[in-house]
Structure formats: structure tokens, C-alpha cells
Image (cartoon, rainbow, N blue to C red; front, side, top):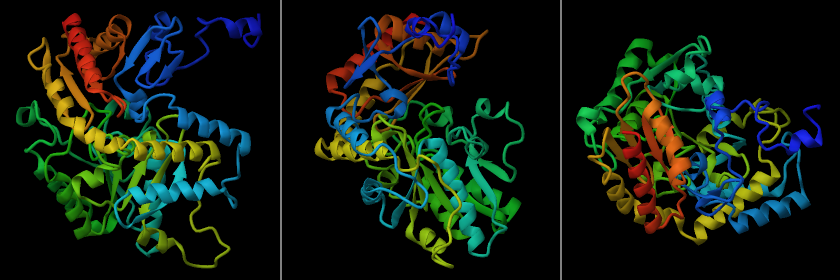
Length: 446
């Protein structure tokens, strides 16, 4: 029977056509973990089993799942305006959301370029950085600096400046003219730190070595996650981001904070830049801006960068960049409703208040079998497990499967690290529940 038939479409275990991203497809299709609906802190399987969301989806459902005001805003927008051209035209909510996002950013970052994902946000920021130097007569500034263990999405720009080897090794030489700072993590010096570790600020000074190697006149921008999330939760050492800012200023480099994960309350503030008192030149965002309901991302840039483009004939396009779905009406409606929820429920302050409760609960896993380190900052935690001698990554993978099937909780894994990042609406009781379930899971895969 043709795959497009009604009968085929109704078969719930017809899994072959879909190529899942960042997933071992054969293992998944042999024992799928399917989610049928969600509400607040829980997912529900097709057989209605409640599964606690310990990861806010993919770090994105910060306001919780299927919140009524966001759902209502999306429905109303779909009935009013489904799409407006993003080039040469726009719609009112795009400007309203840009103003609201800019108001949350540090002073001076006040122009927002919308796209549809964190990957697109990073490539947007990198292109703006390169173009900015070019239009200022410094077109030789083309070199981009990322960081080892950094994750900046899956576009060619993002994986080039990113530093996770598995994301890079199959795709050739990537962008030329890219260098990397060292990762900020050292277990011997930082193990079981709550919040920002004391050791490691000096690692920012490696940027001076890179400048000496390539000369500042060839260098455009440095991009880092304030907290490296996807690699397993690496909080920045105390003073590290401040030193990066100083060195970038010294040599005329733009500093880009990739806040796709850290934005919108994950670290207890609208942006991590606020938490750390460091103002970058560009902030990328996505995920939490719509609480994961409709894809959206963007880059927030300093007024001086935007103004540098606003020259020449007024009828000529200033930046030849954009996406068909930039500032999509449904995404803008979802974003506005999400920002309203963050404000009305004071969720960023709530995350700050819960941070010590979360950290104490996370550190309660210390001493369990094969736990090598625990790191936490804001409402995030990374738990390193010892690798099995014959299969790196298998212990954490088995933990994820066990957690879903036997403990009814969703956790994330990267290598042999477990990552926990709940919606900001998590209660103290649910924090206890999360770590009780994770503790049983760790014992189960010992």
C-alpha cells in the first residue's frame, strides 16, 4: 500500500521514513520513546503515562509546556495573519517583539534581527560581524574565534566556530580562518563546584596568544557561550568573561555571546550578560523566546553596529541577509505571550530563588556509583559519569533510556554526561523528585 495512504498514516509504529536528528536511529526505532502531548512540567506518552520533563524540552520550554496564554496567542494569530513577507514588508508584532527583546538586553544592545533557530542566529551574528568590519574599511578582519567544547548550532558557521568534535569531523574543512580558545573546564581544579568555579579566569588570556599568532588586523570576532550548555554544563570561571571583554576591546574584536541556551531566565536573568555584568557586542537567542512553541531565533546588536550599516542611498538594502520566515507572525505572537508570562510570573527571579535549592539537590548525587563530577549554575546541572571501559557514552545512553522507561523522566545526555535543565516553573518538590529519579537511574546503570 502506498506510504501516503490513510491506512499507512494511521499506523503508529511506521517509523522508517523519519530520519531523526542527533539520534541513533536504529536503536530508537527498535524501541521508540514517543511523546504524544505535554502540559506544564510533564510529557505524556501515547498510553497517557506522565513523564517529568527534566530538560525543558531541548533547553527551550522555560515557561513550561502548553501554557494557555501562549496557546491562545498562537491560535488567534493563525486566524488573523498566517504569514507576511519578511523582505520589503513586515507586520506590527515584529516591531513590538523586537522592542520587548531589546528592552531585556543590556543597555546599548537595541536592534534585533530575527531568524528561526539558534543555528541561524549564530550564522547571522557571524555574518553581521564580518560585514561590519568590511563596511568600516577593515575587510581584512575575517578570522573568527570560537572555543573548544563550544556549541553554536549546526550551520557551517556554527560548527566551524564550535568545538565539539563529533559535530565537525564528518563535514570537511568547514570555514577557513577559524581558531579556538581552550575549553574552560579542568576537573582537577573545579570538581563539584557550585556556580562559577574559582579557577580558570586566566584561560581567557589565550586570546592574546591567538592575536599574536594571526595579528588583530585579521581578526573579526570571538564567540562563546557564557555557560557552555550542550557539551555538559560548563559554567564560566569567575572573571573569565570580563577578561575576554577587555582583550576584545584592546584589539578591536567584536564579542558575541551565544545565549541560545542561557537567555530568558535559565541562569536567573533575562540574559547571562546581566548575571555576569559583561556587555557583548552581539547576543544570539532562540529557544526560550517562545518557550519552544514556535521556532524563532535572533541576534541583538549594539546600536553602533546597526548604525554603521545605515549609510548610502536609502533605497538600497543595507544587509543582504535574511530568511523567508524571519519574524514569522505566529512566532512573534508566541514570543510576546511568552515574555508576558515571564514578566507576570516573575520567572527569572524565581529561577534565582530556586538556584541554591537546585544546587544542593544536585550535589546530593555526589558519592553515587561512577559519579565523577557535578556542575550546576542557574537551573542547570551536568553530571559526569565514568565511561564503561568498552563503550564510551553507553552508560549515559543507558541512563537516558532507563530514566524514560523506568523512572518516567526525560534527561539529556552528551557523551557520558547527564544534563538537567527543567522548566522555570519547577517546584521545590519537583526538584526533589527529579534528583530522586536521577539517583535511582545512576544506581541502575552502575
